[in-house]
Image (cartoon, rainbow, N blue to C red; front, side):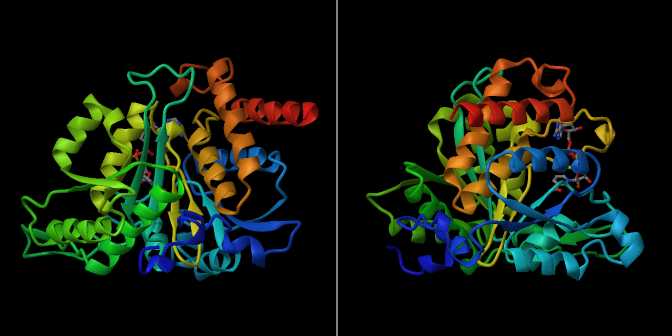
Length: 367
Ligand code: NAD
């Protein structure tokens, strides 16, 4: 096994499928922190909670709030009580949280990842049977570094008419995320890791990221293939021939942008799940944001957050339940009768969730 791989959380480490979390929790119920978020978040969180409750796994929910509404009450959009809850429970699921554009408080989403050391952003992107898109058979996994790069938040004005943002890339964080990607690839039977960068232009920062990826790749030679792509070319390649790619390994900003592009290949942001994983905790959330224009309308697609819940179930070792929920979601989408507007239907968030719960219940009744 590669040296230093103990830094990779157990479920994502090759040859170690037993999650450490399971051994420490009571056998009957696991408490999960639930952050509903804002915009479309609360509706999606409720739908996801209903589906996970129907999965057969006993979960207790500890609901805590973060974001603008809390800011007014507590003077911070990310109260310590929220961080404490996640650290206590080790697993959380969160709805999207709005970040003011250009002004106001810094992103709660980024702060959560940085404060809790959730260094790996894992975003599987898979075609859905029955869902008409321009591509078929897409099966990619995006592994995005989650703690540094331009998201370090070091920026300032240089006089009144210029601004400067500092891009931080370290060998330690780059090697850590590269090791995560390779361990994930080995543990999940993937064949290739592609590092994505702009090292032709940013020779120091992206150059260091690429060098770090190459160092780790050498430790997996013969097991997992490795290649690299410049990010602009990668975008074109993904649009033209996504089937050539498998696990994509990216620094923070490119990872964010390429995630939305990849979501577009399989049906849009409504179906793109994600996980933020660290050594001490994991927070599961959709790739999409709070889509304020759809807030409170029972209209948004809860699939992405539900599939993030599937990742949560896998993370806690509930593989069978994860498969049941994923199968139910995919079956309801394939049937196409009770799906939301973005998937070509007219069902509401609640009706869609109800169809998935009904499917889970009917499968359980015939088992
Ligand atoms: P967004 O992802 O919220 O929405 C973009 C568009 O995608 C929407 O207008 C809608 O057409 C579609 N969409 C997104 N989610 C959908 C869903 N579940 N069902 C159906 N359609 C869906 O992106 P944005 O408008 O750029 O950002 C809105 C806010 O969300 C911003 O404040 C941003 O900072 C925040 N944001 C938060 C997170 C997070 O919480 N992790 C992530 C991204 C953006």
